[in-house]
Length: 165
Image (tube, rainbow, N blue to C red):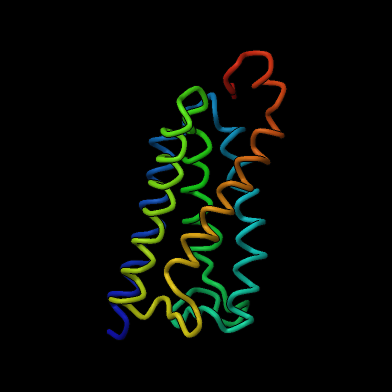
């Protein structure tokens, strides 16, 4: 069957994302998870459409080929899932070094997976893009989502010192 590896990666990405959400979002943080997930979807929808419409990145193998050129799996489910886990488990009371490492780990995780997808599959191609642009934009969207998350839950932060669900 053509593109068997790509289909396996796409389906596995969905399954792993669902399992991660079920296992790592505590019941008392479901509302927080919804906010983080939906906000990241909004950001990736905008940036994802810009980069594919400008021809910087292409997704040759994807669901909903006629709907838009972005990857529904990555832009609307995998990245928002990982950003949700990032925000839910953010080390709010830790040192700035730990926070920096947290950003670095989460961003690197996505970039390594994306780089693998570029090199080993036909899921993503970089006509006018480089891995470090992914690193910078993913870090930036994580930062923007963190600002929004803190703003949205500011009363929880101010009254309890730590976010509650």
